[in-house]
Image (tube, rainbow, N blue to C red; front, side, top):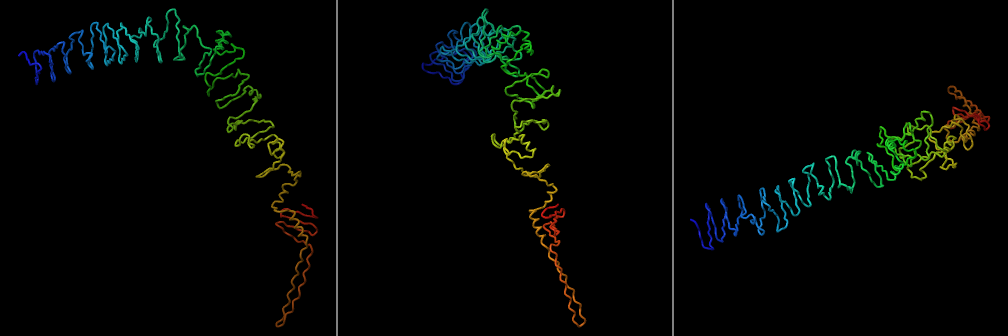
Length: 537
């Protein structure tokens, strides 16, 4: 069988599997359709004026019918995506252009892309490269603005950023230029001055070793404003020297020897007049428990120290001593023109329990006691104790009633727990002459003594009653049967003597009159005799 013909407009449908072992030619204007999977082991040749429409096709090789006009897809019907396992090989002097209607389009390459040959790889528009880019050393890579994560030199000894003939106009850095070699060389064109303009600060990485210039390559001149040069000590202390101060140094013509004297602290060999300092004089390190720097020494002392306000002592003691005067037995005085005030009135003292002063000298003005429970200015806040007060106490006189120095108002003394008087006792100009033993005679007296004596004396002056007469004897008894004789009448008693030696007793006191105008009074220990209205002891 060679040919199969069927009328125009008809369809030849073959159901089931069709295996063609020879060639299959389909002619005419009708379409050859295969429904279902198809496998072609030979060549498929199609006329140039016809379309070949297939679904997913697996081919070994896909060749262009005409290398100059054949395309994969067309402008009106482009492929949505193209997947390649390895390479796009553009031979000859042809150009591989990836664009859309003549406009640049985005191309994403997730693997590696190698461009070989002498042709130029040109990208129109922004490009983003997330992987590495490798270029032959003999080729140039020309681009506009490039954003890179890191830019590494191919050869650290020969690679450069720009060249002498094609230098960069500017280089912008956000932070650091890290030089791994020993020098960063910035040079200009031969015969022209190179100026390095810095918009911020030039700061050394290591202040202990980094310099501006060196002993072999110093700068010719250093220009600074009149603000000054700033010297920074290791502890951060800042000392400046202004242009005017440099002029003063320059006019003083300091030579090398004098400068060495300044560096070694031999100021007496440099200046013989007063030194004026516009800042602070500070030690290089602060003093500690083991010592520190001093102003003067045991052998070289300052004559005077003048300060405007404060002496601030951070330790526990401010020691002002004169070892030489103490050794010689001379007096050492601290003379003040103002007041000594405590920083803390509740805790600060003059002297201490273990180190008291020998004597305290004050003027007759007084020692003033301050009661801090009252506000300043309150009448009860201050109480003075003057030299006059001490003198009054020594003389047995009362203290002043008020703070006025001319106040002579007497103050009544209130004494509890007993009082001892070693001299005489005078009341309103009359001196007491009785001894303490004599005063003790009135111990236990609870009422007026004179009233009691007057009462006793009047009682003793009246005579006592006479004694009662004795009772008469009883009559003798009569004989039996007869009446007894009547007893004799008793004798009449004798009349008592007037003012006889009667005694009287009153409240523990015994009084005895002798009838002649004398009266004896006794308390069992002592006896008083009153004669003619006078007291005899």
